[in-house]
Length: 263
Image (cartoon, rainbow, N blue to C red; front, side, top):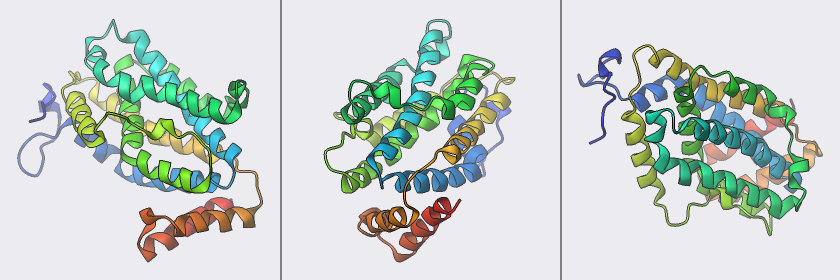
């Protein structure tokens, strides 16, 4: 059974009379904006599949965010025992992701891949991370960003490999790791964190900020290609994808992409 946060009395009760876990509260706090973010990110991401350089610029954008979250967590690992309790997960979910981002980017752009990173587009995001009140409040970023790859990585990898030939997709791969088991253990460890009563409000607010910052960053990401060619190509990718197996999902996916194209 998953461990409950010791400060359970600050959490509202569930409909079953028990106490809500921290990850449940994060889910409820972010549900609406999470859905909005999923649509925006997947629409823009799918549109980026019309051009390799555009796709890897998008990958580079998220690489800079993952790298900074990792940097700050590692700086504070030895001074906060709560962060130290997450150390077994930082390796496979964050450190190796950053390394795999770098491999994928270098595989495409070559030795000078860092010259292709757009630091301006992540400036707002990284500035916010630097101003987070205490290191423990970075856990929502670690949590949500990690689950995004764990849950959606396989689907994204399939779409990328369908759109392009000879590209590296290591960042979406977890060799030797059972993703669903890792996800369950990670959530259990997050639920066991000793979150102080005066921290919970800030913690949940940062959970929401993850998606607000993602949306802001992705909205500013420019896709510079022929509108008609982009739309036709990404529709073909969607139509050929078993991930969009229902007719409703196909048309919804097309609609979301077209909304991004005509912005």
